[in-house]
Each structure stands twice: as C-alpha cells, then as structure tokens.
Length: 374
Image (tube, rainbow, N blue to C red):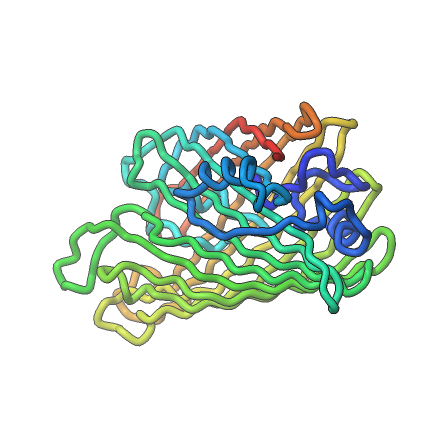
C-alpha cells in the first residue's frame, strides 16, 4: 500500500517508503529550518470523491501553491474480492484487524482494483516546536464488482520534542465498507444480506531513538466498528497495545519488528438470542525489511502472522471455541524515475484458516503503480 509517502527525491539516509515510519527524515524535517516552499505548506481533509479536484486546485490556486501534494495510483489483480481490502490494510501501520466475512467463499472471485491515494502534508512551527501534519485520502475502485468500492481517510500529526523523541497522533475513518453477503440473525429468518461496517480508530505512538542503530516505538489505539442494522450485534469496541523495535542496519536499510495485542468487545456478547458474539483477542506479529538496493531502487519485504481467538461462550454460536490463523507475506519494489515520479510493483499473498471451516482461504494481490509529487 502506498502509505504516507515521502516525496520522491527526499532521501536523507532513509527509504522512500513511509514518512510516519522514518524518524530520521521526519525529525530532520521538523527540527531543521527549511526553505519557504516547504515550510509554508498546509493540509486539507477530503473524502475520496475530491481526489482529482484537490490535485488540480493544489497545482493552480495561489492559496494552495505551497502545499506538499503526493498522489499515486496502482492497478491490482486480486483473486478474492471479499479479502482484497483486508489484505491490503494488514500491516504494522495499517488496520490488520479489519473484519472480513465469516467465510470468503462467496463465489465472487477475482477482479481488477484501482487503488488511488492523495497525500497533503505540512510542517508548521509554533512555540512548542515543529509539527508535521498530514492528511490522506485513499480509495479502492473495483472494475467488475463496483459495489465493493470504498474509501478511507487518515489525519496525522507528528511532533518532535528532540531529534530522538517524537509522538504521533492519528485518526482513521473507513465508512460503509461492504464485506459481502452474510447470514442475518436479528429478524429470526437467518437470510443472507449485505454486511457493511464503518470504522473510527484513533492511535498514538511514541518513538524513542536509543542509539544510531536502535529505536523503540510504543503503540496504542482505540476505536469502534459499527455495522449496518441487520448486523448491529456485531458493533465492536476495540483497543490495541504493542511495542515496535527498529534496527537501522545501515543508512540505507532497516528492520522493523512489531507485536500488537488487541481486544475487541461486541454488543452481541450480551445478546445471546442472536448466537452471534464476534468478540475476540487478536495477536499480530510482524517483521519487515526496508532497503535501498541502489540509488534509484528500493525494496520492502514484510511477513505477518495473526491469531484471532474468538471469546464467545454462547451455545449455538459457531465462534464458541473458535480461532483463526492468518499468514501474510508482501513485497514492493519502488523505482525512482525522476525527482517527482516513481514506479511501484507490489505483491501480496495471504492464507486464512478458521478452525470451524473446512477449507483454507487464499488471497493473492499483484499490481503496478505510479507515485507523483507536485
């Protein structure tokens, strides 16, 4: 996923990969005086439908001319429409516990998906120091199954107290995502209906550089997922905590290790008549490598393991005593064409297995994309 990109060409001992995961570049941007065309940028929050308008306005309006704007798009092939968005967002810096259908075997099959991104960022100076503000809109547009198309919005603030200490605050919203058809239980008929979910999640991360090679990050988040009325018993409050350890191997490579513990409590745990309690304990572990292979070529590799333990104790609920194992590997090559343009080549492979299902669910996503900085 193109996530919080550093503008192509800004390479001060760091990968072009992700601004929020690159403290050296970010702290330099926050603590070092910058030219006017970088220090007077400003941000704006807009939903997916304004992506094109914002880019055009940022390029033509004098009031917005100083904004830093990075836009990108990638075209993906996916072999599982129902799992694509959950796989794409499953990362240490994403939303790895995004819900999916009880089973992905819906007969929907494969599709071509266009992933669009728009990032607007600003570094401001105040009496408390310098703060980086970023706003990102992202959308998934499905070619064959347009009803699955969806958008998300991220608002982030990163404040550096010293060159070695910073705090990151983030708000994430993903409205009205279609998960697919699932069994509705509130009416008592138990017929298949569209299942939709809206997520609102806030997070905080404290980054502390221990030495030239080691950094620790303490992460926490809390939020709510609300489902459409037919599945309201699945409305879930969640909270997450976990540490990350970053090893800066060289100026051109780093390894990131992370673990998250998450607890989700559903309204259905008190509504035993529906036999549908999706409360859970979620364990997420990740190891990632970001490396600059040569001057204009970078590589990202990640491997994640997730374990969902359902905590339902309601008789008749298929989740009673249930668990799920998820293995996910991803890779991305980024090639810098010019100071403003880069090409990306992402690929992912995920395998999911629930102990109350008889088959494994697989998801493969492969794509090619472009990043452009205005």
